[in-house]
Structure formats: structure tokens, C-alpha cells
View 1 (tube, rainbow, N blue to C red):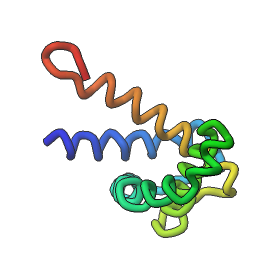
View 2: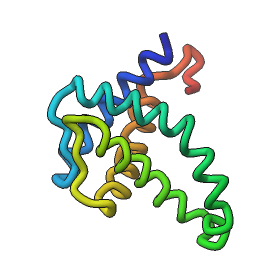
View 3: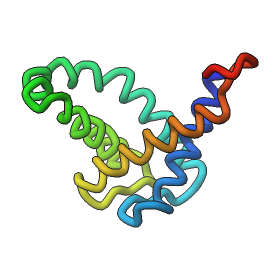
Length: 118
């Protein structure tokens, strides 16, 4: 049940990003659900490989290159999913940052145990 709630929260976060950035467009809730699912899969399967391959650049940039990797994942999913569009790669980096902040905030607010801990 928690996995489904996390998926819905991520879709809601993705649906909220276009209201803060006009260069990101999500046409429907269905597109947001599909994109959130695909973002989760890509971040689970592809992102660790990219992090390993780009480890020297990430170390030299003191970890800032991870923002580029996150933006690439966001841009890649936007290229694959109909109804989810990002204008440029720079917008994808900023969109991925906004998406993660909104998703974190929503999950912190909504997914608490009875003890008040996430």
C-alpha cells in the first residue's frame, strides 16, 4: 500500500512542476502517473549505472554532477512518455530538482507512521 501511495505522491509532484516552471508540461493525470512510474524505474535501474560510470566527474565536481544525471533521467522520461514534455536540458535539470523537492515535501507530510516519523 505504501508503494502505491508513494507512486501517487510522485505523480502529484510531477503534476505540480508545470505550475512552477512553464518549460515543463504535463497534459494529464494519466501522463503524470505513467511518467512517475517510469521515473521510478529509470532511477532504480539506470541511475546507479550512470552514477558508477560518472564517478570521477562526480567526485571532481564535489557531487554537483548528480544534478546533471537527475536532469538526464527527467529529460529521458520526457522523451519517452507522451503527454510529458520538457523544453530543454537545462529545464530538465531544474525540473528534476523541483520534482524531488516537491515529492520529498509531500511524502514527508503524508507518509508518517503513528510515531510521527517518516
